[in-house]
Length: 306
Image 1: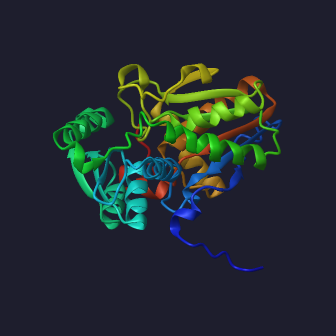
Image 2: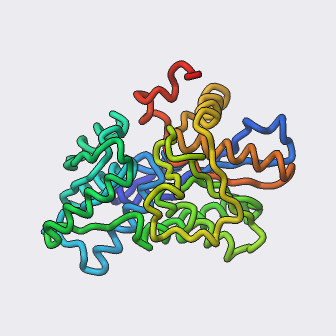
């Protein structure tokens, strides 16, 4: 077989594997669970899809030109994706990040040559949003501001990519879709396409159970700045996940299936288990947004906190 040859790193975004996850198989033998392994994207997360989509949309519209710097707020993964795409395409990148994002994420962004502006850690992702809006308002001509929370190209990446891949990889057998809420782009774009294909597919959105949580990358929408691209009509169910059970499930699949996943993937598994206990039969697909290797400094895989 000929080796894969790509004309550039950006062409490797998408087409990620769909993995069978067996952690609940003994308890729910008639529920098939699959997960999109998004760390196979070149930047290591699902956010490569959205970042590339928003950047290329900006290029097509003429809003992004070589004299402008790409700027946005991010808790980490989108920032890494912007930094990678910017380096590959020859754009400067400036990112506003909460001061408490993981050390691995800060290091990765810096490695790609992006500039970081830190916002108040206590204000979380909302503080970063407010800070980036201040910077853009002060010098609007200097920046291309994709605004991942408001940009339709974010969700469109998943409508055209993630959902189409899931339908192909499951042979259209999917009965339930589960995904976490951050910018909400993954859930919105994927759910919209799946429901157009088959309205009987049930969609479950997952958020932290309250505003004070340890599920990095996820937003508690009732207490946060709600993304403009969020469409609640696409969610058949919306569940609040506690932090510790999500951590426990992440640790569990690392040690039993060799899947090193992040906080939000653990939350997705928590929701999958809750779903499986009620349906008892079905083909459930979720998204593992990234790998756990960028959370090693956070304590996710350290001693359990009780």
